[in-house]
Image (cartoon, rainbow, N blue to C red; front, side):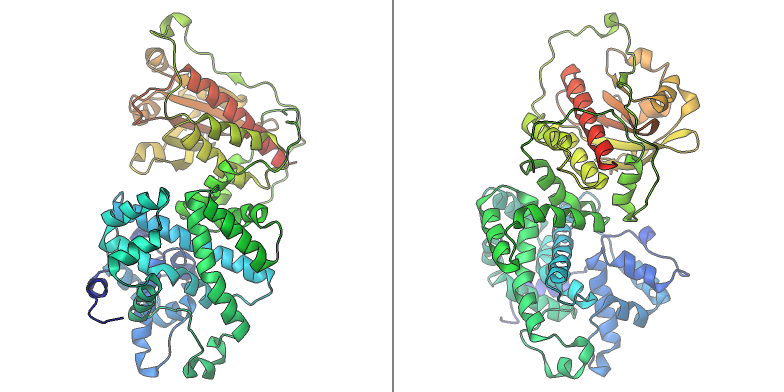
Length: 518
């Protein structure tokens, strides 16, 4: 490639930002392992740490290939100073959205690579992890250089065009050459065509021929698969990729196994975009069993709060649950009198409701063989609420110190009052009732005046005059979780049809969670 390529010249002058805010990074007294753990999910920040460390080692002709080596070389004080000088991407910008999606794809690809290498009993190292992540550094750079254009390419790719070809026409060179040039410029670990003399002299950096062959095949395959499954589970390209995977791994059940691999990847990372593929796949794949729907069991859910927390903190906890008992029929919270909620017209289904998506997820919820863990159920349930029911803001709360307190949310990035919602039980008899049994409620314009006397003011303020749903969950006799959901931004307000669909969906969600604990 010509060194005068204008795109490469632009890339060399760009200031690479970090995804993580400064507040998310370890403090001065934190052990270096904390840095490794946090930075491992922000490859943009890792890029600059690698480059800084390799500059320190430039006189020794040694390439830093692991983050552990780089962090130990730099030290916590210089890491803090370096991270303070690095700019951040503007929250909510096109560049941020694109970077998060493409970085999420790379994280999923790294997880797939690790799982496949373990299956084939090929050693997997930290250096392999970073080579996999940086394989698509060229895409990240283009999202920083031309976010609007890249957004257009994504839109066209979703409708059948080849994203790589569009990008290559833009930059005037093969995408892999573009990526290799950037890895060389930023001094990042990259897959070598052959072992260099320097690498062969350093046994720890040496890549054996059989492993090098595996890397050359599985690197592009894993990234293409991670990208395609994020776009769509059902496509001709996905069929081709699955057949390729069957041959490469010697698995006749590659597609069913893909569900497990993608779900594991979603649980490994905190970046929400790393779970996009899992949500889409779990929502749209066909059910794993054609048996008749089993009899619905009691609604319960003491551990969903814990399950959601697992997906966020990635720490497995084992709890001894109470013996399962048939739960009482969920009782809806009594709503205001019919006079105060007489509709002006027969409610109609909102255009944003996708019944096929809802039915598919509910079918899987009722199929006891479809689910492996509460985390999988949680991921698919949130996807169903957003994509199936058209709900935009969702808050998950748990009982903590006498209050319903938010611990997870979707669609609330710019709604701090909702993200930090805390509702003392003593402030409302309705909230207290929600802790005693599975209950549901629908606040709308027809009962808002009466609800002001029964619900906490901060809940109504956070809702911002939006109609919303509430629903509590339990496992066995213990209620520990409640969700808030609204459709802010939808031109059509929530109505009784939405409320019925919401209750039915939550009931099946709760049933699936019960079965996963048996």
